[in-house]
Length: 305
Image (cartoon, rainbow, N blue to C red; front, side, top):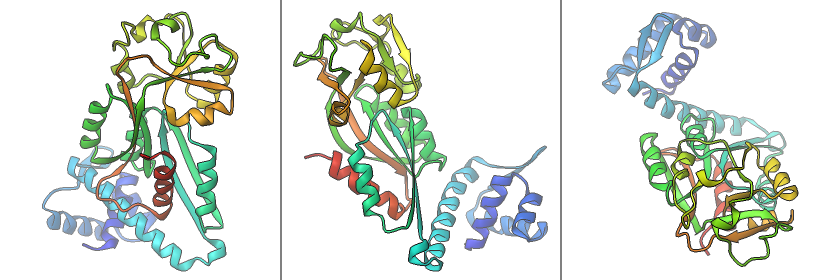
């Protein structure tokens, strides 16, 4: 199996047309067709099928495409490293982060650990479902996710379907974040029933968030909170926490960072719900040096003590 053939397949899949791919690759259409036919014979299954709008990937072809794109991307990165001078090197990493406010100090540690002159770190703050899909679709190289014990089994099933794997970093009890000036902030722990008159703030609902909706917390369900705000940005959430009686469900890993903004973190009283912190990646894929550096810092900053 030749690298050139993998490049051909990736270009055809992304252009959805053999003719357009041939134009971009500066090869003839028959050359591409013969290369794909040879690849299919070697694999033992079809990777492309013709449609009224050009060509599309078969089910197995789509799975093979993700691996091919990963291989091509990594080899191209190696070629670029060999060609670049040290002062011109660039690094790029995309991470999807779900339901976790990362420490500012860790971002500084990450930048200090890089040798590249130009570094690009793309942090996509999103829901748990979208973080999984971003990694599966190559939009992000890795995902960092927190999920409670009610959601974890469903997330594991989706990871298996999407051919992703996870590494558990830590676990903690489910917590509540609210303003340090909130009347409930002085307690050692908080009962969900005490918050029924407060504003429940959350990220946009996805499949995994809906799993929580009818769950019981000391006899309280999320549907019992009659005042709610949906916000898709963590910094907007923090600002709202500072100036209102709103609260969010969260975890201990972001407690120190939120404390800098006068946000208190309280464990929930005897609800029996834990939260897991883990990262995900595509199976059988070698991670970039940037991703390995980021994950090493995640383990140091958030891993089991």
